[in-house]
Image 1 (cartoon, rainbow, N blue to C red):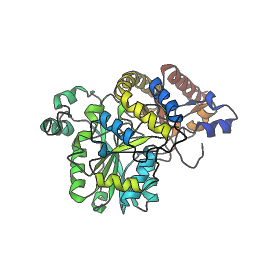
Image 2 (spheres, helix red, strand yellow):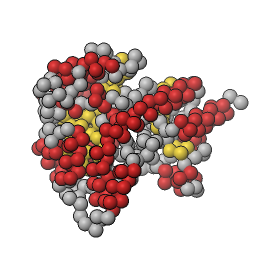
Image 3 (cartoon, rainbow, N blue to C red):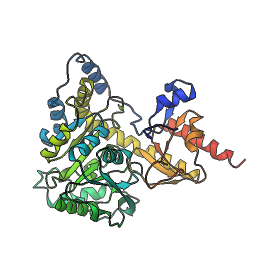
Image 4 (cartoon, rainbow, N blue to C red):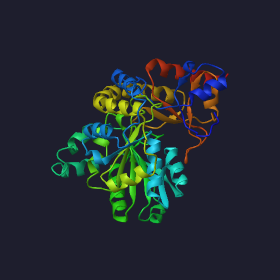
Length: 399
């Protein structure tokens, strides 16, 4: 489905194209929580609407306080924006890097923001690796529990969160890193979109330390971490204080299924960086509705994330089995979506659209091609409908 932004979730465009109501479409192209938004957050949106006659607080004090409490960081380490994409653009406009290193494949907005800010993009290919039992993030956590006030999870606890077939990624051997200089930026995604793989811990820590030495900012996107059930074991948040060059990117959009509200945020111990990002955008970066929703979401976060991740895992495993049974090669993603290769089916997105199902083609991702796709993990009934539609399409080829 052609469009200017190349992202998933374009239900209104698809509905107009098909001449149908958007509510008749089944959207697997956007990685949203299939269980929707909690009632408490929906009620907060209505409360925020009652304040629409007033300007929102440009300092985001109440929202920052709520996020800081949920994340157990100082409010000064928080900055919110109109979705994670807005935060990415603010970072790039605020930092004005000459160069930006981007893992490939990964979220398109990293490259777009870098280009808009006048930076040269260096795409480094992702290299998949098995996760090692000796986990550097866990080891560093174990070594520094007292320093980080007990926030970090011990190594033995981290091991228990692994599965035997865990897979991670690192950037492949390349001389591109040598091109980066002080003031430049590197983007990583944990778990990665669209593959769903975690950053390999040993490599990630070494990379982060090397970037700190050279004055390079590392943006670690954790927008999908809540769906994995491993947010405590896999988050890089414990290292914010140790690494002022580290920025964590988070979003309420996916977990709380509210992409129309537009609300994301960053965490960093580098308060000077936050000031530059703030100055790179308008004064009122979020609406009263988004602010109210965010405060409620921050309070509901831990419970909603735990309930969601427990439900998502078996659904993801069953969907993966179903896709593999159709002959597709599926990456061992750990989030609420799966990336798969469908050899011989470069038009799968268009053919599913005729069945009123939206799928995300990955043909516009650096490093992927027209036969690569990403599908969200939805409810068992919805997943079954997708698999049946795919079975009908693949079966047509063998008649």
